[in-house]
Amino acid sequence: MEHHYYYLNEIFGALGFELFSTYPGHGTTFTHVLHSWLVMVFLIIGAGLLVRGIKMVPGKGQNLLELIIGGLEDFMVDVTGPEGRAFFPFIATIFLYIFVSNLLGLVPGFFSPTANINTTLSMALCTFVLTHVIGIKFHGIKYVKHFLGPVWALAPLMLIIELIGHFARVMSLSIRLFGNIFGKEKVLGILFALAGFALVPLPILFLGILVSLIQAIVFTLLSIVYFAGAMEEAH
Image (cartoon, rainbow, N blue to C red; front, side, top):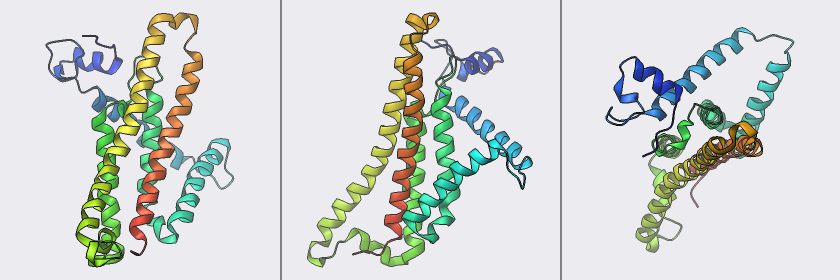
């Protein structure tokens, strides 16, 4: 079996943490967990530095960040209404985490946490649970009407269909993100192994950046749509 070389795994393996070693016979490799910690540390430190550097007259970096966060917030408010602003911290966090995680795999010797189904499934479950928490928060017990349809005679059938549809959202969110990023990782790994010094993978590298952004946007957009659907009155 092929074992990729990842800097974090080698460092932690050398320190005696065999669970993180990439070599056979050294336990289970939690590569996605290690790199997920790295992304979280990067985001926490980056947020702290940006907060300390906020100015009344913003510089280029602050302008860019305000453009991204402000645009994302305005889009969410347009879809969900002003009430949806309360859930924006989750949306912004999930977008930044996915985007940075996707980009991390473009650096040789590092791994995208989102190229592991466990990572994408955990985020999909968070969106799934929060969607129904929002529905209950806005409608109380009446939220069950979302699953019963407009015709009471067909309510049992509609309940089954709606439950299947809602659980399918978890599969859709997790597998779409995992499949695209896993494919990007494999293609880049093969190209760098075959012709890394000839700069042949550079076009694929730029395509990987585009895929990373698109997949972060798609996951975030679908989450916003699910939240908006939970906030609406049942028809």
